[in-house]
Image (cartoon, rainbow, N blue to C red; front, side, top):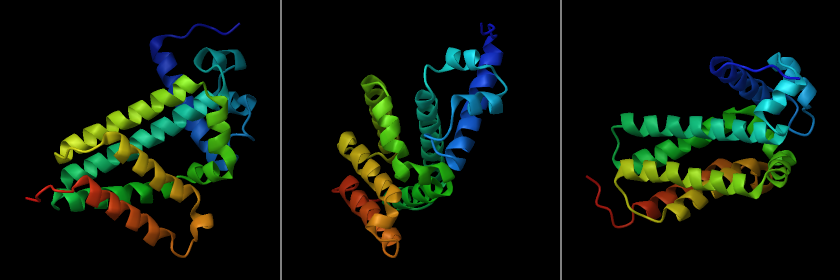
Length: 198
């Protein structure tokens, strides 16, 4: 039977699980990472693991959300410190965000079927909640830029650009960066349509 943990212990274990799962995702991918490997690396029992997560997929989904939030926060910070006009800051921020995405080794495993595997194993409500959270974060970003537009559209467009990173080879490695920049600049045109730059 798994022991009870204090709130502080729970916080430490949760952070350790997320950190170790991110390492495993980059090294082995989701399918090849076992709960046994995760608990060994985190230094907890298998019973304790299930106090935190009912499945390894939910842990990996938390990793995905955590890294997604980290990247978006970095983009928001870049916007706040930029001296460029808002539209140009938005373009540069998005470009920087996708550079950061490509620096994470586990992102490359998403194109090997990990994303589909993850989504199939998750409860539908969990996925819907994530999409809703994603729209909330985009809403904050647009509010900061003082632009009004369809948040759902912007969120979907950013997700579509993200998927081009996952399918870099199919799109054509030679033109991939140019294509991503084209999509980002087109999205900026739509977002700032009719807005007068200061």
